[in-house]
Length: 432
Image: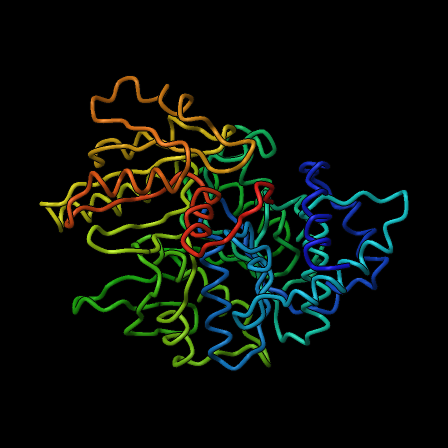
């Protein structure tokens, strides 16, 4: 089968929706030899920050000379972004070969989802490519996520807990923390990022029950500025001065700290990384769609924030920017999925933005501009509409001065639409 044919088949699996549970995944992997059982794995979950943390850990390991597999989701433009080795996307011919092999074992009794099939593809590619370590980002939740078939990772991290995907994970931070904490394994070290008290209590209890050594941000490890203004990492076994983070925003300091604590927790023969690799990996790491600058004068920034907690982080970044650039206005290009908390997302951003341009990602489950406008009833600032994301960006540019900032946010799918248009790609309207 051609690459386009196997991708069309893979997207067609979205008809199965999201099915939390490990039975199908385990059966599928058993039929192809359980590749995950032979991998050295770092497992990263959380509501926000898990992708950045995973990419940082992978970047440091790469700079340390390791062959590193990185599995993340979703992709922005190209499906192959999800599966990388040392930063290089899986080749199209490998997707063809491995998906054909996976399809051959399905029979009539096995109906995997898009994400289950993609995860199995990643495991096979990493094993057959001889990676030294695979860094896996959890897709949804943790306890029943397809990546959680890994039974003995080197270490795991849970970056943050916030309100998102409540229809699957529960309506309280404690309930969501319980689901996310499902990746914690007996006796396997676990790193915990910045948490609210309820979530921290739940995760601490799970770690204790499973005799999993626990390292907490702000207690066993930290990344903060010293009196000279330099970033310094303090960990269980290392102190590293002069850290520079290639990803923008103070919240990325927390993610960088979690990545370094994760590597410390996994420290064993063959996994040790030196200070030079840490500094180089964090300085050069790239993670698209997270406060990513794509143009200047006016400055245009893409951010995949799509839930209230991430909006709060974005609002802090924009507030800092406004303080440092008092002559600049901030124009928000905003689009979201229909199943997200629109009001909870936009509320922390309203005090700092000057105008809003509403738009819609090219996806069937996107919220319409009319649905988004409905939560702006009490805001007095200008609200404009442009159905196509590229038209929305052009409209924002037409209203901006050279010193202004345009921020595109609310959905990774929206970010993907903008990036695809910039690259001249014909982006499929069906995406995972």
